[in-house]
Amino acid sequence: MSTPKIDKISRIHFIGIGGIGMSALARHFLTEKKKVSGSDRTLSPLTKALDSEGVQIFGEQVASNITKDIDLVVYTEAMDPTHEEMKAAKALKIPMVNYFEALGIAMNPYYLIAVAGTHGKTTVTAMTTDIFEALGKDPTAVIGSLRAKTKNNYRAGKSKYAIVEACEYKRDFLHLKPDVLVITNLEFEHVDYYKDLEDVQSAFHKLALQVNEGGVVIANTSDANVKPVLEGLSVPVVNYLDILDLDLEMKQPGFHNRLNAAAATAVARHEKLDLDKTKEALMNFAGTWRRFEYKGELNGAPVYDDYAHHPTEIRATIGATRELYPDKKLTIVFQPHTYTRTKSLFDEFAKAVGLADSVLFLPIYSAREKNASGVTSRELSVKSLEFTSDSTYADSFEAAEKQLRKKVGGDDVVVFMGAGDVTELADSIVK
Image (tube, rainbow, N blue to C red):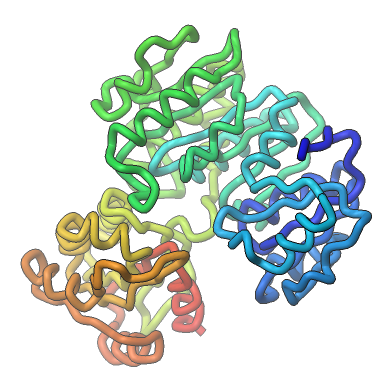
C-alpha cells in the first residue's frame, strides 16, 4: 500500500499520540491545516494540551476510532500489529507508517538539520532551535523533550529550516535525508535491537551517506567510536571540538553541556550565523524537560529529575551535579530502564552510580520487554556496593519516598534518574 503525498492528506490519526515525538508531529500536521486525531491508553498533560489545541483525542484505543475518512495512520514503534486500531486500519486499507516514516514525510522537504547520537541529541536539538530562533531564522523544530522556555516539544516555523532529533532505534533515522547531520557521540546502546557497537556504527554510517549533496556532517572526529562512521563520505566533516569553549557561562552545568553547545555552535557557524549572538543564545539556554530539571526541595535538599538511563549519561549528570553543588552529599534515585540494557551494561551501571554518595534503586522499568534474563535491580544494588558504601533498594515508589523523607536533609542534593516513570516520584516528593 503506497503512502499518499503530504499535499493529498487531509486527515491523520496517531496511535499512541501521547508520546513525546508523536505529539510534536501531531502539532506539526495541525499547523499544516490537517485534521488530526489520536488515541492513547491514558490521558496525560500532553494529550490534554493537544486536545486544547484542536486535536481530537480518544482516551480509549478501540477499533471504532478508525474511520474511512482517515488518509494516514501514524503509529508508535512499540505498537503491536494485532492492536485493535492497527487491525481496523489495515481492514480499511488505510496507509500506515511509523513515527519516523511520518517524520521523514513531513521534514525531508525542508532544509533539514538532523541531530543524532547516543547521548545529548535532545539538548543539542533544543540548543540549535534556540539559536536559530534568537537569530530570526524562524525554524520548524521537532524535539524529543519540552523546551523549558516554551514548555513545548514543537516549534512551528515559516522558513526553509527544520531541526529534528534523529533516533537510531531500529535504524529509524534512516527515513531522514539531512542537509546537516550532527553526530554528538556514539556508544553501544539499544541492546535489544543492535548486536554490537559495529552494528550501531553501520547504521550511523548509512545515515551519514544519506546527507544531501552540498551538506555537511558535524561530529567529534577524534572519537574512536565515531571515526568508522565518517569513512568514505562525499560531504565535508566538521569537528565540533575545534570550537569547544570551556569557559562558556551556561545555566546548564557540566562538561557534556559544553560539548553540546559546541555541536550547536558548529551548526550555526556552518549556516554563517552571527557567533556572538549564538553564544548569547547558548548562555540563555534554559534546558529541557527531564534533562537535569530542577523540581523543588525535599527537607531543604534541592531535587532534580534527569533522563539518564545509560552509564555515560549517569556519569555526566553526576559530574554536572558536583559542579553545581560541590559541598553537598549526592543521592541518586535510579530506575533502570529495560531488562536487556540492565543486563548488558550491569557492571558499568554499578560503577557509574557508585560515583554518588548514596544510591537508592527502584525496580527495573520494563518498557516493551519481558525479563528473559532474570536480572533485577536488587542485584544491581548489591553490585554497586563495590563502588559506594551506601546502596539500598526500594520495591515501590511509596517505599522509596518513605526512605528519602526520613534520610534526606539540607546538606544533600537528590537526583532522580531513568527514562521510565521515575519522574512521577520526583514530582510527588517535592509536593
